[in-house]
Length: 83
Image 1 (tube, rainbow, N blue to C red):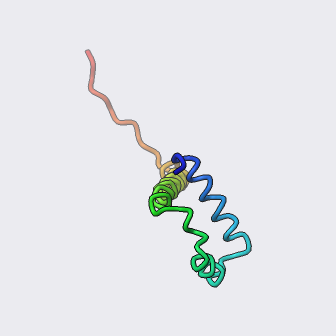
Image 2: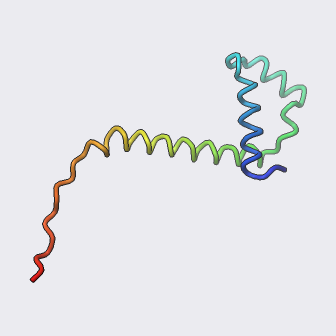
């Protein structure tokens, strides 16, 4: 079992190669039948899913900040009088 980062790099490369020419379901089914995914465990795919979810959350946050929050002006609130 690879560590977290190496596991994600390996799976990213696998998905890049798998989908390089588009998504072809018949090829994926044949790969399952040949056992080409047997080298990965469910735990590996689970860790990759956590990584992908984290990346998507960061992307969405970035879009929200760029689109909405940066365009909102917050008026100065009066502070308590000192003295």
